Length: 330
View: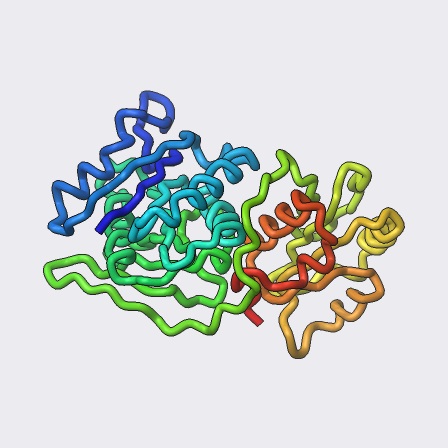
């Protein structure tokens, strides 16, 4: 089996210093050394390192570089590609790769760590081992994240465009539908299994994108008492995260004025996660306010999709309502 490992930084390539956790170039190959010293799986690894950053510093530059690199390697005979990454923006990079790279029959798996590898609580080595096992058994394409959420739990595999934002102050990785794509249980009788998932609809990867440095998306997280006093002249689009039930405070005069101003300036406002079926009566004004309602989906996947639409100068309303890579749950 032949696997390409692309190192991009993150905690999995970091060490604890006197004051901070920082990238450590000496740790770049620790992951591979740990695997080779503790596994009997016959794997030949090739290595690329296009950049090294802590993932909170992710920008359009890195997304463009990484997606082009993965695309260039897909057809070179690898059984799979592993991308090491930090946890903070894991979902965003996973979605970007899913949208832009035709993975064919080559699985691409993002691997990260909750602590530096020398910490006994770190899941980094297990996440990497799980990714290798996943690639050995999964003979289909797609972009996934390999992650062990609990100390004694399995390594789970999550589909890129269905991974939700992290809970506050938590590194836990979860899928919006509550289902992982599969799991790997480490031990004397190690097993890997795949779960039945709903069909992943969509048009398929759209091809490489040069991500603009800043898409100028105004992201608003719903909170009580928001004045909505935002300078819309600075933005191309608005993305509002509703409350968990898919609602907004449509009684707010501030929101009503904001929506009217956005309409006048022809700036679309997108609202994900408004489920089908009966909704609360506060959603009745969504059409009146010209809000573009999207099906149940994750904020990272929708944000990256909107970034792509702006980068490609697409009609935003049309592009955002078309499913590309299984990002819509309903």
